[in-house]
Image 1 (tube, rainbow, N blue to C red):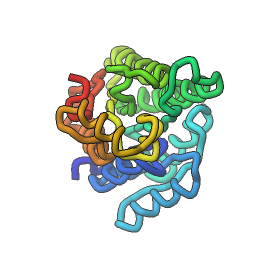
Image 2 (spheres, rainbow, N blue to C red):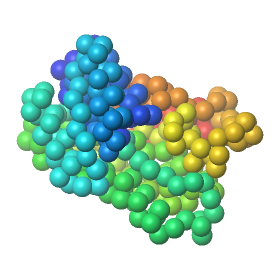
Image 3 (cartoon, rainbow, N blue to C red):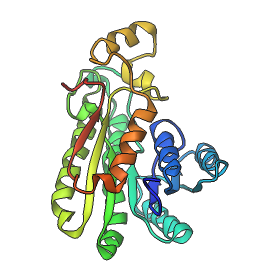
Image 4 (cartoon, helix red, strand yellow):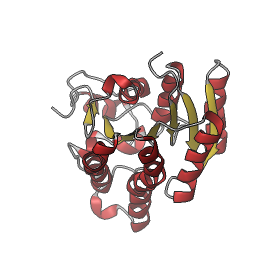
Length: 251
């Protein structure tokens, strides 16, 4: 198993990409703390892992709050003895629409979850990682932060911000043995897909697929497999990377 003896936290793991990441980490031997603001989804995701003989616990919490992130770290340490990997997956967007139609509330929520959530995660994780002289944060960013597109201006901006933050943290904490990398998914078959495309219908899917050289939407498993690699010792000499998992969308 590629992640034997690793302990990971995955935020927003009650569904979609986060759930797939948590499942794959567990399949490769990691113990996983499942976080979500939706307790029913989070508990279901944790149970799906334990029902297969894996190790998982659920920790409800709002990623924008430092205390919630500290509680996840504490849950990992209490349940499994340590914490090696933090996957900052929780994220939100708005319906695809013109920039001037984005409300201030929508703007504030996106920056709170997508950017401040990563800030709070780093604050909660880094002190312990400094003490153990190792640590690994994987941020789920987006191709939107590399190749922005109309209709998602401020979502694009949040993902660009965390990509730069990942690179900056990698530079600052590399000498202490702590790695930071980002995965950049293309539009993926999750509950948020309709928001990104401005409606989930055949025409929008055809139009979008035509912009991807490999000709399809992403699947949660695509990104989960990338997360397994970045969480493993196979990627021990990789840090500060924003990895597009996008079928060639960013070429």
